[in-house]
Structures are given as C-alpha cells and as structure tokens.
Amino acid sequence: MKIILKDISYAEDFAKFSNNKILRDIVFKEKNIVVLGNFDGVHLGHHEIISKALELGKKLNQKVLIYTFKEYPKKRDTLITTLSEKLYIFDKLKIDYVYLEDFYDVNELSPEDFVDKILLEKLNASEIFCGFNYTFGSNKKGDVVKLKELLKDKINVNVINPILFNLKTDELKIVEINELKEYLDRDYCVISSTFIKTLIENGKMNYVQKLLGHKYIIMGKVVHGKKLARTLGFPTANLSSKNKIYPLFAVYGVKIYIENDKNEYYGIMNIGKNPTIENEGLHIETHIFDFNQDIYDKIIVVELFENIRLEKRMGSLEELKNQILMDTKIWKEKINDEY
Image (cartoon, rainbow, N blue to C red; front, side, top):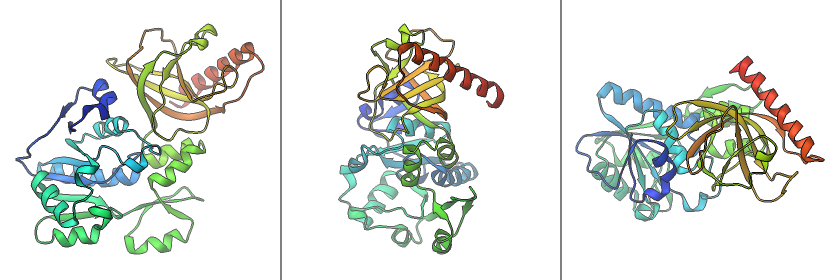
C-alpha cells in the first residue's frame, strides 16, 4: 500500500510499524478506482464500499485508491480510529493507494471544482465508489445526487446502499435507500460511526466487533510508566492516550502485535484510572503473557476481544495482585477454549 501524505507526522505510528511507502506527492498516469469517505472505524458499511471497489479493481486490473482527509478538525477528539489505526486496517484490506488530503486545501472548493480538479485531474478516476450519505465541496453542498449529475457521461458513480442492524434480533441487512425509513421505524438502525461510538463508550465490545467487522484496536508507542505493576509481578506496556474514543473503564482480554516482531501475543489490558494506586488520569496498560522483552519506544497494536470485568478499587495491593491473577486465568482459559 502506498500512502500520499505531505506531513508524515500525522501517521508516524503506522509508518514506524509498517514497511509501506509514504509519498509526499504523486502523479497518477494510470486510471484508478476511487473510494470516497471519512472511514472512521472502518466499519461494516465501509467494508461493503471498499470490497465492491476491490472486486471491480480486480476485474478491470486497476488500482483502488481511497481518498480521505488526514484529519477532520471538528472530530479530532471523538474518533474510533486514529489516522495510523485507519491506515493499519486499510493495509489489512489490501488497498493499493490511500490519498490523505489536507482538509483546508479543499474545503472551499465548489462541488464542480472538487470533481474536476480532484477526482478527474488529480486522482485520474475511472470509477467512483461512495456511501449513500457522502457529501463533498464547500459547506457540504455536494451529495451523491450532485456527484452523479456532475459525472454523468464521464465516469460511473457507484453509491453503496446502507447496512442496517436490528437492535432486537442482531440481524444485519442491506436495504435500498428508498426503503430506509421503513426499516428505521422497525427497530433497525444504520451502521454508522456515531452508533458504534455509543457502543464503545458503554463497553459493548461484542456488538462493536460485529459492526466494525474487525476488532477494536489501539495503536501506539510504548512509553515509560511508574513501573508499579512490575513490583506486583505483572510488567505492563504503557501506551500514551490518543485523541479517540476509549471503551468503558475495564480490564479486557487482548491480542498484541509488536513492531518488527512476526509473533502474536495474548494479554490483558486495563483502561482506566488505576483506582487502587493512583485514581487519576487515563492509563492504558497491557500485560503481555509470557513476555519479558524490552519494547520501550516500539509501536504495538492491541486488539480488544472482550470485557473481563469493570475497573474497581481494591482494598490493598495484595488484593489487586490476586485479582490480576484471576483476570489472567479467566482470559487464558477463554483463549484455550474459544480462540
């Protein structure tokens, strides 16, 4: 996967973790199938759009290019995935190019200029794929109807229908846009980043995984902590908090991937305030099972599988130690039985 990004600092975690090329600019001589959207969380709705584009790309022998912004200024603190995490998922999906545009470079463009200058000239698009609610241009004046109108007789615009989730039956269903209202009145909701954020904040990780189509992930650099967990016999990899939505304060069963290490590791992660010891700030700590290497300053990716228990204050450090032993036992048994 090749990434086009003027300022690499926006994706330095991913750049360090992966071997993908990051280019400051590129001239596309060949035609590209272009996928448009924000893709926060890269959920099932996004997967549907991307998979359709990849399918056509294979058929036409053309590259698939995702065009998105490197950041949305107003959404900076409420993201499911950081930019590096989003790129990590794109890479897993075998995307050819990701073009990360600067929001302020194009936010004043009219819909007409966006189509002509960006889609046709800069990206050399042969086909467009987007979601049913995609908007573009200054003040979001352009929508999918406008996009089709502007590209009529030039290139195809493939608008992908929404995926709905039934809150009572757990059913997933793709519906036509003109059927949407009917289903929304019948306990269905559109799978969206907004809906998934609510599930994350409430610790409903089983639903989060189902609607994302992958595990909720946290990617970051291992930083030095106070090493208090080490004194209890449970050394942890501490991650600095990012501007993103974190799940309910709890202990989670996780799988860990480490920079320049092809192995997979299991462990338990605590997200919260460490109420027994500190009870302040946000702490993201992972105890990796059967692991004693120095990984300070390395980038790791942590996949959250399930909530083992809520975070709680213990009466003593000894009680905390015994609880961590129990958490470890519970997760190891589940790994052996289910994973």
